[in-house]
Image (cartoon, rainbow, N blue to C red; front, side):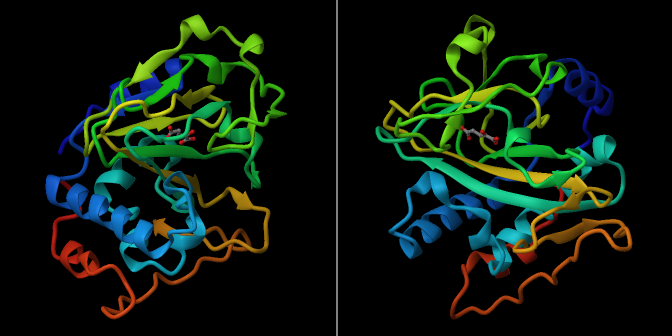
Length: 261
Ligand SMILES: O=C(O)CCC(=O)C(=O)O
C-alpha cells in the first residue's frame, strides 16, 4: 500500500515515532500469530515476552517475515537503500499475565557503531492501552541518553529509567491495529504496562540498521535485507533454508503471498 513518506519523515523527526496501519496483509499477520504460538510450544522454558533474536537465526519463516518489502519500504526513507537486520524479538504478553517493559531508551543496550538504527514494531495483535500497548514520551529522542538503573521488578528488561527522572504525565499510548507498524528512534523513551486484559498482546520488534552501522559483537548473526553491504562492515549470513520437518509450516505458505499488502 502507498504510504505517506512526508508524514513518516516529519513525525519520526519531530516525535521520534510514527504509526502506519495496514502494512502487512491479514494472511501474513495470521501466519505471524500462528508462528508465535508454534515458538511458544517449542520453547516452553521461555517467557513469551522473551522470544529473542537467537531463535530467529535458524528460522526461515522469521527471517523472511522481517524481509517483507512492505516493512523495508517503511524504513528506507529514513535509513537509505542499504539495509541490514540487527535483531528481532517477539514480545508476546499473554492475557492477564503479560509483563511490563519499564521506561528505557534502546540506545543504552545495543552494540552498534554508530547508533543508527530504527525499530519497526509490528502489531501481531491489536495493541491497545487495555492489553499493554507501547507508551512513549514524544520528542524525548532529541534529549540525551539517560542513566539506566538495575531494578528487581518482574519485567521484560533488567534496567529502567527511574520514573522520577522523566515526566510520565507526557506519555502517550501508541495504539496499533494488527498488521500495523510503529517506528521508533533509539533514543525515544518508551515502555509498556503489564497486560491486564484477557486478550494477548503480541508485537514483533524488528531492528533495522543501514549497512554502514557496525555490529560490535562477534557472537552475532545478521542478514542483509536490501541493497549492498559496505565492505569490511559486518558479515551477513544466508537466509536459512526451509525444512518442513523442523521448521514452522507457514514458511511455505508465506513464500507464496505478496511481499507488499
Ligand atoms: O513491546 C513492548 O511493549 C515494548 C517494545 C520495546 O521496548 C521496543 O521495541 O524497544
